[in-house]
Image 1 (cartoon, rainbow, N blue to C red):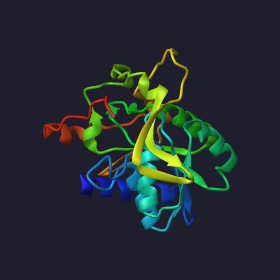
Image 2: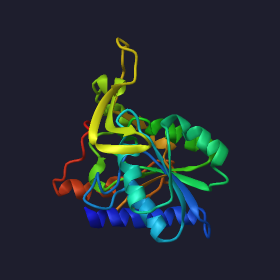
Image 3: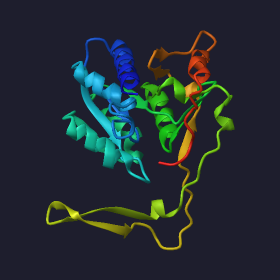
Image 4: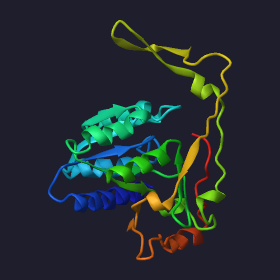
Length: 254
């Protein structure tokens, strides 16, 4: 898993560097795809790590990733731990970030992970991914999916065939974390607080599906897959992974 992730990071970084040759670039990512989510390096976060190691990264931006805050809790932790220049934003700030700072920060790509990639390239990932792809398209920023071949499910023809899990409503209405008091975080005291009006209805899908039309490339451990002249992805190379009886990841859980 680590070697596959390192290859994903290498190929993804090289692809982005070719888009903006000779320049430092900034990248936006969503949810957590780093060493805490994999065996030790990461997929989308692995691409950021590779860009940083190459001296090509100006800044990484990570979304908070509501409602479970994998971005602010986990991705931000990894970026700070690795001393990678990084900035945290809320999910609702992404479009404004591209509009107001896209040029000055040289934001070249949005790189996300995947829980399942359908045969046509439609990708299921943490909720909020789809809106990032729309924003990227409008602002001329490349949108990349980083995932090993085992995530490609050739038996699922398109995203329309993927059932999206709906999570419990309390994940949106309460928040848990260490106490913050007198300017410091006290890790000895973990508290749960309410952040929504009691009695409000909640819709909490865990994932959304980004159409292949909005995806510029799918980064795998074998290289970056781009669309052919027909405007479609050819993902049949992933058949080898399926022949090895490796099951594609399922859509659900955290």
